[in-house]
Amino acid sequence: MSADDALHEGQHSLTRAVAERLLREQAPAHVELPADAEIHLLPGAGTTSHVVRVGEGLVARFPLTGEDPRAVRASLGREHAAMAELAGAIPVPAPRPLMIGRGGHGYPLPWSLQTWVPGEIATPTGAAGSVPLALDLAQLLEALRAVPTRGRTFSGTGRGGDLRAHDAWIAECLARSEHLLPVPALGRAWQRWRELPREDADVMSHQDLIPANLLLDGGQLPGSQGCWTAAASAPRIPPWTSSSPGTCWTPAPVPCCASTSACPS
Image (cartoon, rainbow, N blue to C red):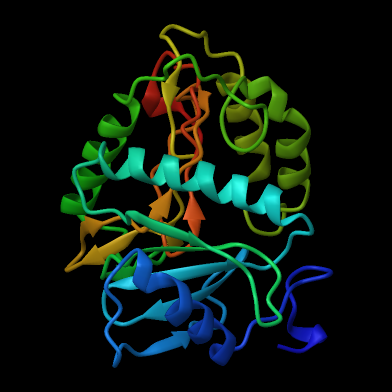
């Protein structure tokens, strides 16, 4: 990858040959890796990691950035714990963590290996009229919000928390969307939504449910390729989108609003 193609400053490069060498040296101690398993990079599949398909059933993620291998390994460990929690909590298949590998051969950071969930990645309009998908998503959200918070609280970053803390970002988004959206009406709606009273306890939230993170099969939800990093938040901003290789969900306890039908997306 050239510097012009990099998503981040100081991004670490990875070749297929290096990825295969690391996988073949380290993965067999944790998972069966057939000698004929095809290993190839998926360009553009991740914004935080190089995504590498490993045969039919596995995927490896090599972080794009990071300076301290110990900090990266600790982050991957938290991610794996959250991924395992997610897989055990939702009614559809989700990736399961398998191992964290060591850097080498010119790639400097720890990396991770997980199972691969097949499916078609959703688009914003591809299944817009699907009632079965809407019902599947409702079941997914109910399952996520039923996960015990175990004392976890909203971290203060990302989606969730007190809506009024998002005023500055909403103002910027509306100002930049005047040529696309009915901004005056949305501004009035935001003023109503931000005052919704908190009525229920914090619940767990995916925090990155966007179409690119949903896997579909015939317009329904056969699985989710995502991980979550635990945090609690208020279900005022409902996650009705999705997950793909390398996306993460944060168990974020979020405060509940009076009417979920009035919540902004």
